[in-house]
Image (cartoon, rainbow, N blue to C red; front, top):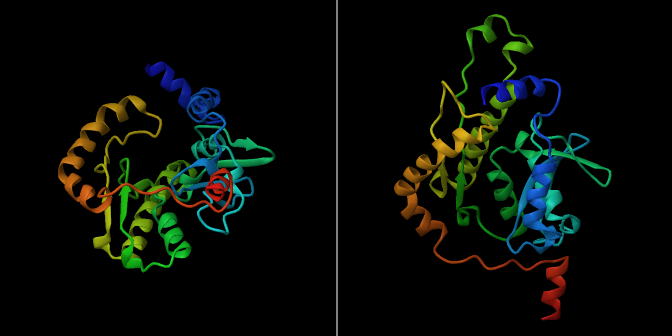
Amino acid sequence: MKVRKGWRSLRALRHYAYDADTLERYLSAVFGTTSFGDAKRRLCIPAFDGFTEVHIFKTPHHHDYKKDWRDRMLTVARATAAAPAYFPVYKDRGRFFADGGVWANAPLMIGLVDALTCYQIDRRQVHILSLGSGDTEIRITNNQIRRGGLWYWRDIISSAMHLQTQNAVGQAGLLIGRDQLLRLNAPPMPEHPIALDDYDRASRELPPIATRLVDEYGDAIRDRFLFAPAEPYSAFYGPRASQETAL
């Protein structure tokens, strides 16, 4: 196991760590040929495209969202899962996508902005449940202060993602009121954080943490977010829009 992880780490210095064929087979088995427009719940899923611009795949829940419903669910899943250094950039009909977690690691601001711009609602009507999967505690080291350089700042991407999460949570709290936002997350692990691709540790250590959080916050989650089923949205475009028109 250690030898395999060591080889994977060395290989990842100049090549993506994993082949995406296995991931694609599993996603194909789940989604088949389903289109993004078939989703019954409003979705805004971040990625970034080959021109290093942000991209958000949006279901057709607003009349301005005319394009993304045509994409396959598989395309959206592969695009947002293409984490740099772990999976190759996803290529689809001349487009190139990578994981939106680079710029929207905590995408709650995407949902909040979408809700406020698409619907005539007051910001105090919005309640947000934000679920994290564990943070890395960020500290500036002595070597970063004294020497700098790419080697000592090699973990800057992880740091940037952590800080983006803090910023998004803070902005959302200011906009709707911190009492309207419930953020649940695993505690920081400053000594030995769980690597993004360490399935063994994640599957072993995160479920007990999740159980504790549910025990502590389960009643609040039920009362604030799970009091009634969400109705399917009315689609403006795509197959669901045609079905609703026929009805």
